[in-house]
Length: 593
Image 1 (cartoon, helix red, strand yellow):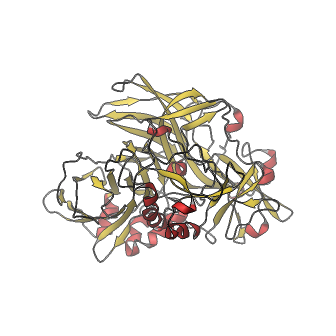
Image 2 (image 1 turned 30 degrees about the horizontal axis):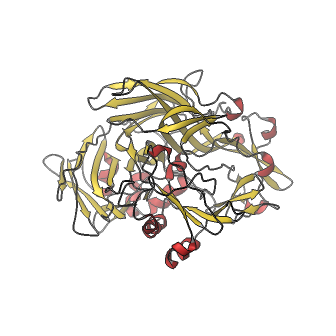
Image 3 (image 1 turned 90 degrees about the vertical axis):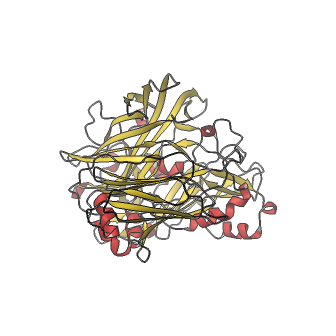
């Protein structure tokens, strides 16, 4: 249920929406044979509440280029074909989510350089880019120009051969850069990078269509939602959300159906960026390794790790079957609505958001009783994302005086990865009194087969940043890892600490989610790096290390202007739109979800 990793917190994510979109199918149990084929249930009657924790959708936000055009005192968010689109010619600012193409066919930056797998013996197998998930031009847009704004293409489909027990494996790859661009100031800002890799099989799915984003007619925002700093307008580009189902990518009448990820291998993605990523990264993999280099004026970031399974939950419930405390807890916070077969409405939340506070975790602890403390599905995943700017600035405050250690670092300071259902996605919170970083996660105690679900936790920190936080010199360090259980004693598993090529790496695996606290402290060790672990467990032995890193000459975290914005979804018949602002309201004729 609750785990407080007293060692870190996560590098989170970028979103400010609750996802109030479509659900598919029924069943909250793990009856699905292939866990990756599990689909979110739909409500069966009016008045039900739906509770969902599945953060895969956070890593696959929809793609779009939007230009903010001012007309008649209002800001319209126009869907643009490119930076040179005549409809967006007067845009003072563009917002974008760009899915980066492979570094082929003329793409030399803002592209995926390489996709590869490394087996247990260290042998590397490179995947080969085959095609995009769809060739329809309306799903692509071009950036470019002297300021090297990213271009966007659909998911790229790669193939790799030679894996043990398999023939050729297809992989659907997304590397999404979110940010903004102000043409008059040549100001390109990158807020977030995310990457996902899914094993897939291409199958026919008649009637399935790919979303085309929002049309300009339904993405305008009232002037009351525009924030001005006397120089610039700020708005959200209207990016949409879609609940994850069994399709990792879609085209017209085609589904690239998710399949179990390869086991016994580490999967990696190398990306070249015109603007560097800084701060922290959080991931859904095990034993992560990272290498970051400067090449010419680009940043090349190479991230790899072993795919993991995560416990997701989802289901709808009648009021009569829910305790008053849970019902009241549900209604206290924002929720979305969805139609029901009896022409009514049901209410629904995606509980994992926001990632930078404890609310999702404390709510999950209460909601798990509705699911018998058991996962609805345990799909295998490989995902990572950098912490978006607003969350990074907020979480740095919790580091106290140690925040300077991250702010003074011009590159990525660390990676945090876990297989928990819910987690704190931010920079680790430092407890100065105890000299420990705090980390919180929560998950069902059982998997779909009522077996204990065992947790994973990895922390990879730039060596200089780690020593700065813990106030250590360049000597070797040791780690003390302690898991404090909330039930009957302590179940602590093997933990490994290593230091290589400028990265300090810690891995802790095999704990149960009835264990509430993991406490990790670093201290000087005049001998060699060692690991102090309480009550070793015969669970899988971990190994964590990181590849080389070259510090980047990039300014530290930039500031975010204006007040914190919120987002809502609005509907008018089949038309849906997202509105953001300090106090967002639906346009005339639209109803809030």
